[in-house]
Length: 127
Image 1: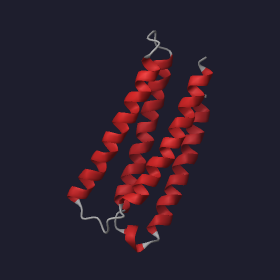
Image 2: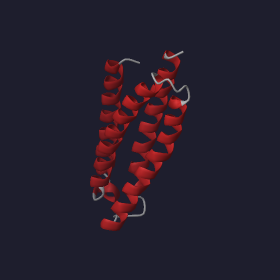
Image 3: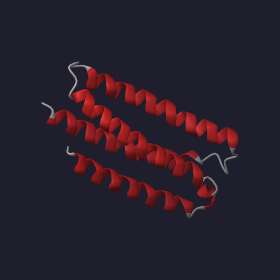
């Protein structure tokens, strides 16, 4: 996967996520928690770029296990960071309903699928 392909597909993924946020915004239940969804989207974009750059370095590392270690650490760190975002939001703001987390989870799922795809392509290209 080239840098150009990565950024094009990241842009597509981000636009799809933004459209989904807009669709959820149309429903009264989710309208008041839009800031959480925007923060989540920005975080996921930033995190994905950092992960991609780190994965490229790990693939070129002399440590043959660096890439696998990075992927495993990524799963844990992303999950902890996203749980922290939801917990902080829940503490600082009063969510409009107990379903406020649904759009957040949709964004998480979209970016997780995207990350899985580009990690798979990176690992295949490195063989």
